[in-house]
Image (cartoon, rainbow over all chains, first blue to last red; front, top):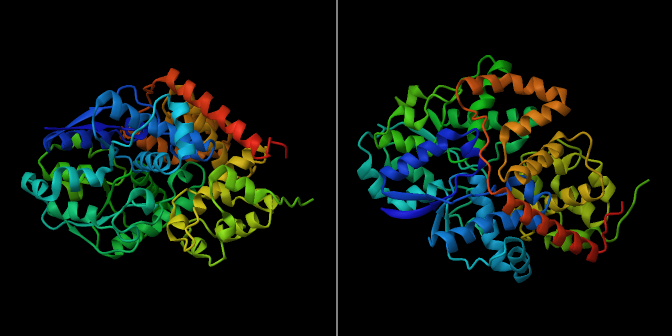
Length: 287
Length: 192
């Protein structure tokens, strides 16, 4: 077993418990020993960096310091795309600006030496586990299920911070889906924004944005959309119920987490993966 | 009355490190922006207004509060300007001046979110929805459309697990005092 630190983040303990459960279960089955950061704090999400920039950098760096100094580990898995973005940004800013590093050190109380690799959900399966190993463990692979891999904003942008392979048309999630027997489709909205937290206050905008994304996935032949972000999942899945009320001809597309897709393929059961929590039924593609 | 601030570009740079004067109005930021078209201004216009010191024009529009921070503008800018960081800095300036746009509920939501993780060490999603609904009647109707369905499916976990609240309190205090000192030094003590 390879030990790797784990930062679940607030959403995985709130509206996306099935993301947490399916990630933990797949990691264990794939030979990763997840060590949850003791007493972890919120990474500050969108609110911190738009209210207090320094706090928005210091909060994720504080978690990186715990991984480096308290756990003595050199990698942390951060499956929530928004948390992942804050962790990468924190590490990037501290490494690139001595003034920021000093300020952050004053806030956190300890210095971060840059010794921790931050991995998002796709990185964990693609790099930490590896595609060959993943394919070998897929005892119940999909038989060519056509999926649209949706990366959203923060897995890849900004590329200076994330070091993503191709920020406009990434392919690593597609490769993971393929390794477990899916057939990823080529489509247009891989990295377009779903509207994120505007879902709480500007539903009209979010219905437009999510509607376009789902409609393109369907038009390009996808039977399901695969995501790696709790907010993307709740928006793409949840808003379809509302869109369908306004548009009687709407054909819903199920939205699953990559961890649920992988979990199903390696033989984990539906209950562990939380497959009944979706508003658009996923059993028609996951059964 | 419209106030023209010659120091706006300098304030933005002091807070975010971004030089807005590098923008030459190619509008790639606007072309890729998911929320351009939903407010009176769009990202390239915001950048031009920063250069020209037109803070009132920016704060009287809803645009900065619709910015989701998707980073498309920052990723595509040929001048490598971190446009999204400029939007964040403008939100920070707006709050410091008490000029949060009254027609932008997302601004209040960001503050509820901030207060929640400061209070508990972690952001408590259910608390945001409840506190928003108390202040905004339409928030209740919106929540009723999806919330009960999500609760029934077990999609929403209403309980709170606290983080290390003492550590959070210490970090927030230090960060806020450093930030205040820096803002004063940049010549913006908070006066409107």
